[in-house]
Length: 169
Image (cartoon, rainbow, N blue to C red; front, side, top):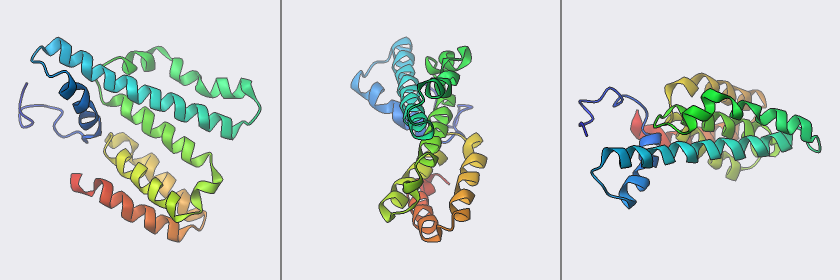
């Protein structure tokens, strides 16, 4: 393997690569094919995270309407999404992050307590460590929290976000 200075991916936020470490550590091997397969497990974990986040978000958005809940999940069945879910790429982490944001926004009560502010801050921090493409969506969600006049929530989650991901920046 190359050193971080030699790779073209070294500029990417590290969550996907940090998440793949346990799979590689458990099955310590120098076989590149085995390492790629183990890294693909990380993509599958992120895909499953997206699936369950969207499933619960769909239940919150459309309680009792199974047809709309299933329709809400159909983007996960698109061929490119399925291909990415089985590949060694950090692109799948952005899907999972977006799904978690949808899940958060599907629950009105999540913008009320300090506990939820800390959880939201941790999730925001982890999202900042996925891919740069998610940043505009994260900004929109943060502005939505302010628009809901949840200033205390915004401050607590903002501080937690910085604590979670600030080391990367």
